[in-house]
Length: 179
Image (cartoon, rainbow, N blue to C red; front, side, top):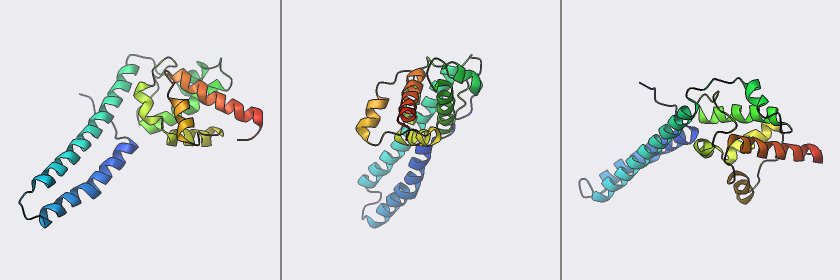
């Protein structure tokens, strides 16, 4: 039987907000209302429970998708993974940094990740925070606004596309001489 996947950072934040805000508000609403139990409070509490369940199921589904994608594959260490991107300028270094940071964000072992793998299971983790951390690590300019971020992330189909986009931003910084 498989072990439950770890909870993502966003999932943890959602659960903390759920417990710290939602439950006390529901209990408070029950005590101040004249009806016992009020329909509105019950609906509110039920909605919060469904959102919490959806968040948990979504995280679990993504982790299972990632595990299924990597199943029956030989694990690649960081240098071997980076070597698959040697045809891209700064490819190996960029690929190693991208996989390392993705692994931190996803909290799943990504040693089976390959360049041709789809980024669909990773898309939730390719957020502006991810690119800010990656930009800090590799010293390139991260997207500064949503249209720029969206234009960079929306066309991504594979891990190779992701590495190419980051490597091209890194190349632009190197050619201009300033981050």
